[in-house]
Amino acid sequence: IKLSRFIGPDISSTKIRKRIFHARPVTGLIPESVEKHIYENGFYMPDSIVDMQEKLKAMLKNKRYLHTMGTVRAAAGLAETYGADPEKARLAALLHDSAKMDHDRLLKIAEDAGLAFDRFEAESPGLLHAKVSALIAEREFGIRDAEVLNAIRYHTTGRPGMTLLDKITFLADMIEPTRNFPDARLLRDLAKKNLNEALMVCMEHGIEKIKEKRELLHPMSETALHYLKNEMKKGG
Ligand code: FE
Ligand code: FE
Image (cartoon, rainbow, N blue to C red; front, top):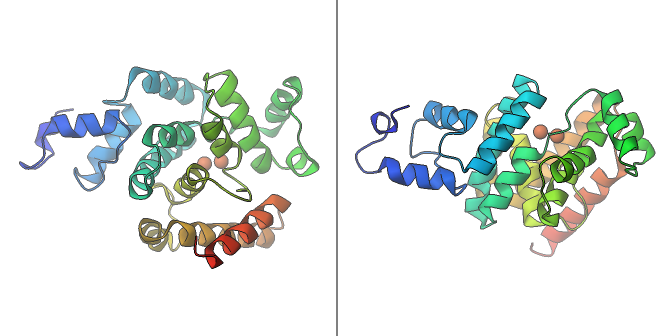
C-alpha cells in the first residue's frame, strides 16, 4: 500500500515504518483501517515476525488470527504507555493463542510433551491452551525468553505477582480492537489511564462470566485477583 496517501503532512511514512518495525504503536498517527491493514499483513515488520505471522496464519482459524494481530496492536500501545519492552510485548501477544485448537489435539500435544497439567486444565480447553501456547512458542517458534513464555502461560488466569509484561498481555487480549463486548470502549479508555484498575475490571468480569456460564474456574484466577487487589491497596 502507499502509506504516504494516508498520512498527514506532519508525519513521515519513514517514521511509521520505523515504529512498526520496532513494535511501537502507530495508533492515532494513521487511520485505524490502515493500521489494521498493516498489522494483518505484516507490513514493515522484521522478517522474524513475518515468518511467525505466516506460520500462525496457517495454524489458526482466520478469526483467531485477526484477534491475534489485534492483540499485537493493543500490546504495542500498552507497552509504550507503561514502559514495557515493546518487542517482548509483541512476541507474547503474537504467540499467546498459538495453541487455540480442539481439545483432543491440545491434550495430545500436552501429553506427548510430558507437560504437567492439573485437573482444571484437563477438563477445560479454555484453561489448557495458555500453557500449551507457551510450549508451542518455545518448541515451534524458538522463543527462549522466560518473561515472554510466562506472559503467554498466564494470559488466561493471571497469577499472583504478575509482571508488567504479564499484565499487558492479559489486558491486550481482552481489549484488542476486534473485541466488541459491552463496555469494551470504556475498558480501552481505562487501560490507557490505569493498568491495574483495568486489569482488575477484566479479571472480575472474566470470573463473573465463567460463573454465569457455569464453566470451570481455575483457582489461580481468584488468587491472582486477590493478589492484584492487595497490590493496589498498597499503592501499586
Ligand atoms: Fe487465549
Ligand atoms: Fe486471545
